[in-house]
Image (cartoon, rainbow, N blue to C red):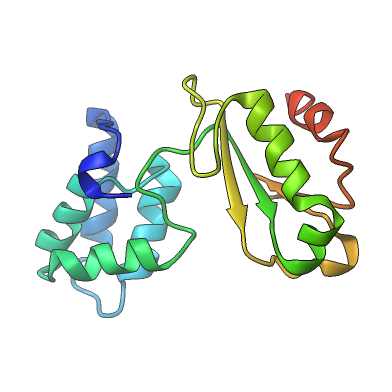
Length: 163
C-alpha cells in the first residue's frame, strides 16, 4: 500500500498528549525506537505517518528509519485496528487444515479483506505467518487470545460471541 493510499485518521488531542509523553520518556536514551513505537501503538492503536514524523523529529533521527521499522515488523500498523484484531495463522499446518477457508469465511461475513478494518472499527482481519502453534492448527488469535483447532464452519460463532 502506498502512503498516499492510507486512510486519513486523526488522533484526538488527548492521544497526541500521550504520544508526546511517551516520546519525552524515551527521548534521551539510546536504542529506544522499537519500544517507543510499541508503547505509542499500544496507547493509540496505530502509527500514522504524522506520528512517525514527530517521533523522527523529536528523536533527531531520519523519518525513513522510523518508517523502515514500522513497515518491516508485522506487529506495527499504520492504520487503526478494530476493537477485535483477528489474526489468522497461515503457516503450513494451519493453511493445510483450513486457514484459507477461515480467512474467506471471516472476510465474507465482515465484508473486509485481510489488512482491513470494518467501518465501525469493531473488527480487523489479518493473515499471519506461522505463530508456532502447529500442534493445535488451525489457529486464530483475537487480540491476545489463541483459539485452537478452529472449525471454519464455526469461526463466525467465535467472532460474534466475543462480547
